Amino acid sequence: NILKNEAFGFLVPSSQPVPILGCIFDTCSFRQGNRTILTLMMGGAWFDQLFKHKTQDEMIEIGQSTINKILGISQPPVDVKAKILRQCIAQYTVCHVERVAKAR
Image (cartoon, rainbow, N blue to C red; front, side):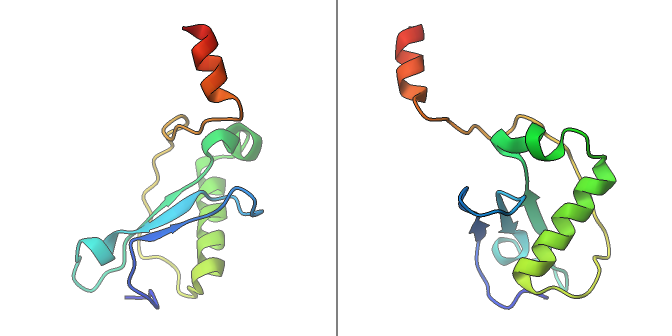
């Protein structure tokens, strides 16, 4: 296990200049033997702004380097699986409630 602390994971406040939304420490919730599994979330409402013209490999590199820096991970991953889900996390912008009320 390469994590220094056991936890569910963390979220990154939108005020921080970091290209990820958060990370789930899967193996802290569901033991996987002698492995550490992380799920990284990136983009959200800023997907197009940050990643629209990036390849999947470039996105993986951005995610890995960011999480390595935050968590102090120095060893390379044994395996990486990436799924690009462009609109999977709903993020409501300012005045969302008013726009919904007006639309109804």
